[in-house]
Length: 154
Image (cartoon, rainbow, N blue to C red; front, side, top):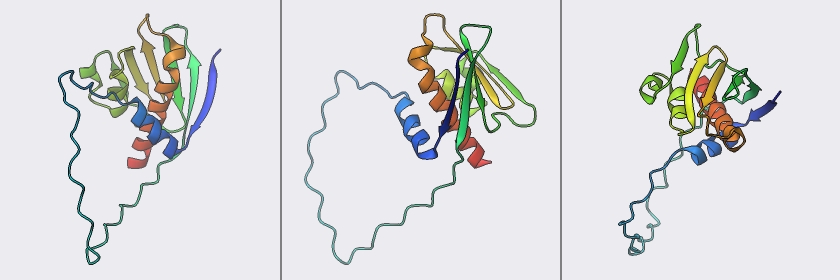
């Protein structure tokens, strides 16, 4: 049985989420950007840049991955709730997933077939042609990051 425990420090989770976000491919006719004139040097009397906003305290989330009787599905159990108040969400299309940020992010991946969220876990079903070895770490990172963000927001 596959079983993995991973702690997601918030900084690592944010970096991982940036890596897995789908980005639009550049169009073939796009021209490379032309260098612009150098920016003028700031004057010594110019105001100092604004201080960055304080970062929210994002909790560390532990994600445990277990196999299910279905070889195309894996259960990702989190150390914090995924859904609150006994609610569940089952999404088989991107339109179904619009109701929850985690489901929406997971359905963006071409190899994800369905997503089921309940309590402290999410079950992800892949398309039969996809390989778990190639995608499980990415999915684990997305689950950990978004669950941590949702926990910090509430």
